[in-house]
Amino acid sequence: MTGDLVRILTDDLKLPADRLTDDASLDHAGFDSLAVVELSVLLTDRYGIDISDSDIKDAATLGRLDLLITSKRSGR
Image (tube, rainbow, N blue to C red; front, side, top):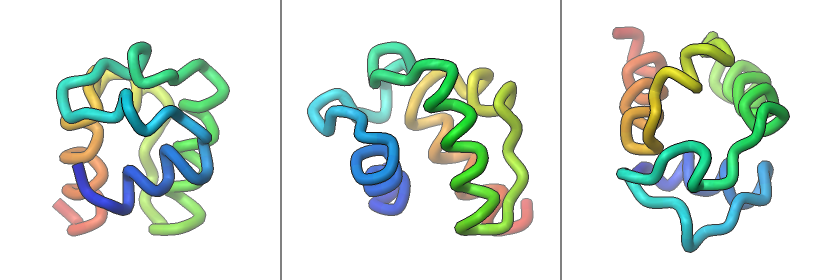
């Protein structure tokens, strides 16, 4: 997982760092419905990328979420 995502999850969303692994499910990492919405808004504000709540939920693991964010940021 990239450092940017880890910082967002720990600093902004206040998720526990010890649960943030590539293979962790969103539930295991501490996501609730509000965290999903907050992450979507943060990604739009900080990086200008549009990742919907359902895109985040569909990622299923933090590693897949990181890949999704990276590909959106690079315009793929």
